[in-house]
Length: 64
Length: 338
Image 1 (cartoon, each protein chain N blue to C red):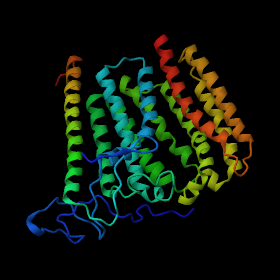
Image 2 (spheres, rainbow over the protein chains, first blue to last red):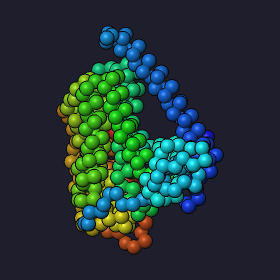
Image 3 (cartoon, one colour):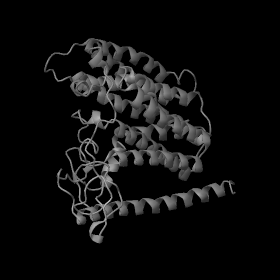
Image 4 (spheres, rainbow over the protein chains, first blue to last red):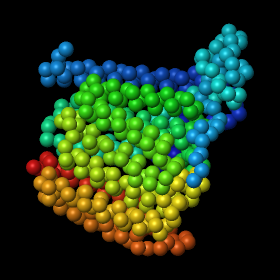
């Protein structure tokens, strides 16, 4: 995953890039990989959340 | 105030070139090694896809903290208990909805943000993301938050959440913010919805107490933001945003801060004599509102001088944030002790 660094306010920002320079294939791939990893985690968490919500609703008598 | 075109050209960023060296603005399939299929919509330098941190920054996470907290307090103050999983989901949906509204706000105001020192570092004015990505992200996140809220909770909470997102984007961001110095007054309603949403998530309906909480935040918003605007006036002036200090001057703004504080105090204290809350909230409200009133009166009556640092205004702004956290915290404590 492409690295970030904290700024003065302590929040993470993506690293700056140079305007006018086309990105390398490796840089693009690294950025895509980073985003794909985050999306994978989010999707997994979403699946778990939907499962938990379904269990709760079924227990509360909202079965389809 | 001249209306500024929202779609002022911003250098396109984030579009991935189909192949290295491809001409901008067209598909290219050179070299047998395409990278991705996104079209470069304009003749600008190809840029990296936006980082996930920039998408997070689009959601204005620091603003979201107060939104989430007031929504949580509204839910906890409701007389009907809610299952922790559903409660977590409701708060998550409020956060996602607020984040979506923030993203769409940044999408629309990229041109203004580029002119203000306070916001120049945001992903769009800084060139770390293209506007289309921000738009797709905002719309997608809004739709997802509403769908999840409806699936997990109820229609009432979903409709109020939808209203808050639409209000913030269309009424405040697109319509009012560039047109009138009363933008904060009316647009502040968007930030007042979370307690209503939290209450509706738990009960499936609204009641007088959450309506008063809505009124509290609605009336709190003008003194909060006008205190900020007093000491960042130059930033707003440079961007052409008709904030009250820019349009009507400092004296009028100070007077309005004092005047709006009065109904805010009334709305904040009202639940106690109405029998909706107990003495924990009541006494906390009296104390906190007395302090707020004192700070607001001090701001209202003083006249700044060049180089005086605007300390009372900064104190009022900082306290206003603490005030809201403490008021809603007192509400929850009061409910638990009832």
